[in-house]
Every structure is written in structure tokens, then in C-alpha cells.
Length: 347
Image (cartoon, rainbow, N blue to C red):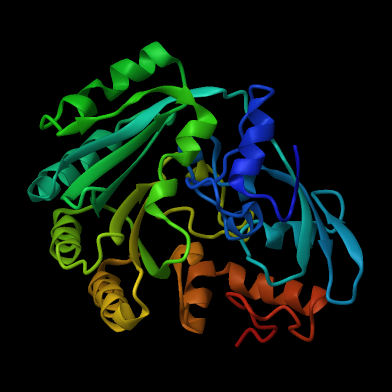
């Protein structure tokens, strides 16, 4: 499947769905395919089929010198390695060729509980996902419903046999019981649009994230504590479980090095009034600082609004030196620098 750099997830889903196919990309249809994929890319199919960057067969790229290159396993393999999770440091990717999967419909939707059940729901979610088949991707979040009620939600996507999926999801749907259970069979493009309304155009955003190796009771207590301090109904505290296909690829196989960290804790502030920026940003920073002692030391860079150089280096780990070498080869003047930048200097 060939996708041009300016396409959104919705554009991609519209075309693949016509043929009963889907590409493992993100979770919001208006997200750009390029930025998502170059930073790794996680979505509703991640546990079964891996990251977006794991499903790229080749890239077409324009270098700082204006040369058009194809990067694949056969052509410029060093650049191909770097583009799979190394970000927009090496050139302008004008076209991606993806491997698509035979997926037309999925069993998915949102389950909602009252906010005061957050600890119980997160503990159940942790234990449930520990043995869940890889056909199931499910994320949890402390959020606010469209009518203004503080809540804890779990959003699930099952991409396998529907009968088996109903059996697997039954305990998750029965727990509580929830205030809302909207799990249903739906076309994959519909699944991709379920969260679009939570990210309206024109808002201000400030995000950070930390990987944690386990969702311990201490981590859950921190989530509940800081989630209840959110200052905006558009903000959220998110738990994303990636255990499965992403971890079966070695850290050295692509630039994306965060293969062993199964839980991503996302701290996403979103607000409308620019006069409120300071307090919403302060909430994210305080939560991030509280999680750092429990972090694996790596971070999902697609979630970082202001990644410091040491965070970028730590998140790539041993891959950083190799990325710097690729940067020196393809962009020695650091022309592409308005990004989560990798310096040509390795010290």
C-alpha cells in the first residue's frame, strides 16, 4: 500500500477498507501518517501486528541536498533502519509503502465507569491484559465525558474472530458493572474515528509520557492521584499496553528502541483558553516528575511536547550513536532540525 506523506489516517483507512484491508497505524483519524510512522506509531492493531514503522516496506525521501532516495532493506538500508522510529531527522519522506493486513471489521468500543472507581478499574485492566490474546489492544484513561462527568474508561479493539472476541471481552464488559458499554462490531475506519471528538481542532496541547515496565499498585495510585488533579475536561491520563508483537523485534533491528517497556503512561493536557496555559502545563510537568523515579528511562517521543536532549538520547539508548552516524551521512549540516533532533555529535 503506497501512501503519500501528506495523508491522514482517515485517508489511508478509506482506501484500504475498500479492499478489506487495514494498515496498523494510530487511534485518531486526522493524525498524519508520516509523523506518526517516523516516530514509531502505535494504534489499535499494535499488539497483533506491531508498530506502524514495523509495517513499512520502503520509504521515498528527499534529502537536504534535493536528492530523491528510496530506503528499503535493499536500498540505503542504513537510512531504512533509521526512518523506522528515528523521527524526521533525515529528510522529507514523500511516500511510504506499507504492508497491509486482511482486516475489515473489528469488535471494539468504549467502556465507561465512574471516576471514583479508577483504582479498581486500572487494577482489573492490568490483570486482564496480562493474559489477553494479542488480537486485543485495549487502553485505559482517566477522562471527562462529553457531558462533563469525570470518569475512567477502557477502549478496546479486537481484530480476530468475532465469536472468540466476544468470549475474551466478556469479563472486561462485566466488571463493575460499567455505566456504559458501547462494545460492538464495526468497520475498522469507524474504530479509527471513535476518539476524534476528544481532540477538537483549535485547542492548545501539552503532552508528556513515560514508559514503565509494570503497572504496579504504586503506579496506579500515582495515576489516580494526578488524574484527579486535571485542570481541563479535555485532558486525560492514559495507560497504553503494548505487550505482544512490538517486543518480538529486537532494539537493534530498527531505530525504535523502546521494545521492552510494555506500558506507556500518557499525560495529555488539552485546553481552549490560552490564558490558562501555565496551569495546564504545570499539571503535566508535575505528573511527569512524579513518574520519573518509576520510569524505565525511555519515553514515547511522539508524546513529548518538549523533549530535552537527554530524554531523546535515553529513549534511543544504544541506537543513538548509530542514528547520529546516519544523520552525519544524510544531513551533515542538520538542515532538518525543527524536530526531536538527533545531533551528528555522539558525545
